[in-house]
Image 1 (cartoon, helix red, strand yellow):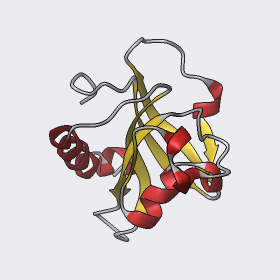
Image 2 (image 1 turned 90 degrees about the horizontal axis):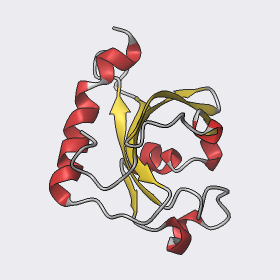
Image 3 (image 1 turned 60 degrees about the vertical axis):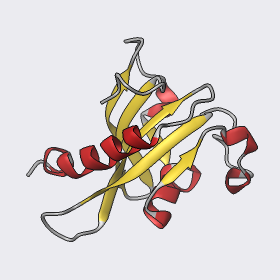
Image 4 (image 1 turned 30 degrees about the vertical axis):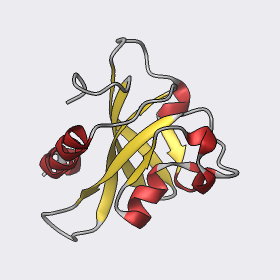
Length: 129
């Protein structure tokens, strides 16, 4: 899933109270994941937009007015996220699946479709069902 996108990271986050907890992180460089990516306050996350709007995409967060005053604006530069929905129970958004990087990237439409399809496939694994 990550091999055809320019983004360095692909991740799954699950909502746990007021926090988003990383369930899976793939780094193309194979490095240890940065501490700031492991647990993110929901209200500071880019994922909050995924929960609210159903998708969130920015090629350059430093130029994105939607992220004004967000502590991760200009840190995580490019981000595309889609919701992970509990298809087997409540039907609610329980997390997000995203590609992101610390440099500017845009995601091609066909790869966005792959991201959306993948989000539907990971629900069972994410929820442990």
